[in-house]
Image 1 (cartoon, rainbow, N blue to C red):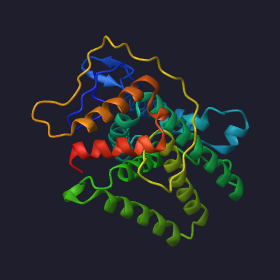
Image 2 (tube, one colour):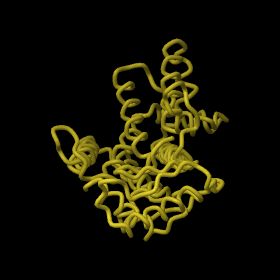
Image 3 (cartoon, one colour):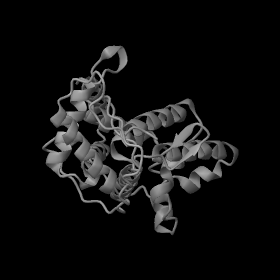
Length: 285
């Protein structure tokens, strides 16, 4: 069974953070399922290029009935090294973030982010009158947003050459903004900024970015999981050699029990912040 939170805290509950299923030795969660689907579609598009046109978001096609393109465009990956790199980044960032949200909430986040970008792209196409061309295709734009959410969630994590994550995040945003300014692509810049803001709101709505006061959140629809059986295999602290105060261990146990019973979204904003603090303390951050 997977570990819900790291840093010496091992809770083996039947919780939403478990994978959907196992394929041999590999756990298949929401991120892995989407990555596999995108990889398969990449191969199929190489064999049948017309499939790309069917999956990519083209506003004119959507208006003529191909409404599935609003959610299928992340699967429209043209075979290239760039597409493969985007898939790797998507899997890495998504896999790390899904550990904190669970498979159900992470699926809601990815679905919400996909629809958000679809609506923005449709609006932009309508404004400039370019409805006959594909405006969204592949996981590239989504991969970048996932990396920014990961950086915002873990700003001090070391990246390349031990550079703090927040520095990389500032560089990504700055390059994107400056590129749009250079090209005088004001609508593209607006779409990018709104996408970043929307990703932050959706992330807060599934329990991420709890330490940020300025990021609002939405109440997303979700199915409440069944409460776990107390007969399961649960590892409670403190553990041998642990210097964690007993009252913090008890507090973390209580929060994790609540997550296992009702999902991460059942925590209040104050509880989410406290959970984030306790988790970071155990990771030495």
